[in-house]
Length: 370
Image (tube, rainbow, N blue to C red; front, side, top):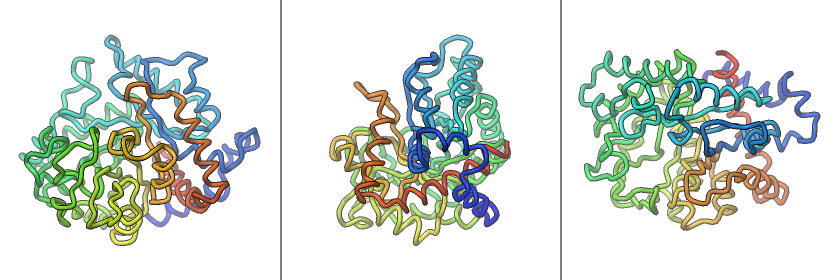
């Protein structure tokens, strides 16, 4: 973010903005609104009805963002129905929603050709070509599709280095541009600039690096203490220096050399504040990876995970509701939980204000300018 954007974001935080005034004067106070902006959820279904709980959560300001998956795409007339879904959700929001999707290409590809969407390719393929025109072509096709459908966030590009060829979650699925940080930065920069041109926020992931892990954090703890290398930070350092990082997603990896307590990156102050903020000087929005992945749920209760994560530096906490027996009202539970922890002092009010400022600055840059 440049200085002008930061001042605009600060103005919005202090003034709340003209179009928020009526909303703020209703039943929810400014703390409720700020906490709501920090919560992003997923839900089941390819359409919403007037009595759908998620609409109430949007209207009430309980959430500030929605993430959609393949489960939200209809088998027929896919484009129109998905567009209608995002439009229905967005028009209920007094503060524009983050409307997010993981559309990396290849394995992590929600908008598949079987639904009538354009073909995508893996980051591995593009990295092996290392051809600017090829990367730009596919990035433009992806970004144009997303903006047409009403999405304003793509959780991409992957900045993980393909250090471990047997890595089961990144490298094996072709999600990395390669082991060379220069190749990763070169291709990621094109993806980011192309998305920016079409009004789509990109989020680099998974900080501080998932490419050396031996296990999948969807299934449990991934300890990279003995495999992680400092070179995995290079893409973040370089993209920050070029002012090309609009968002960063944390990794649930454990690295006791970076956090002696062994907390996952998503919950770690030394990693998110000490390394990402203080050392690399990133000051944008930090999104959690899914807080319902087993690396978090198996070892930390909801309250502890949320408290640690927000205090560590998370600005947006994501609950995908993709696991069995997910509570579709998690947003309300999380919102009330955060508020109670602020009121008790377990989370500082200043941390909420800081997150809100970053979120609103990013929303102003993209969601009001397009």
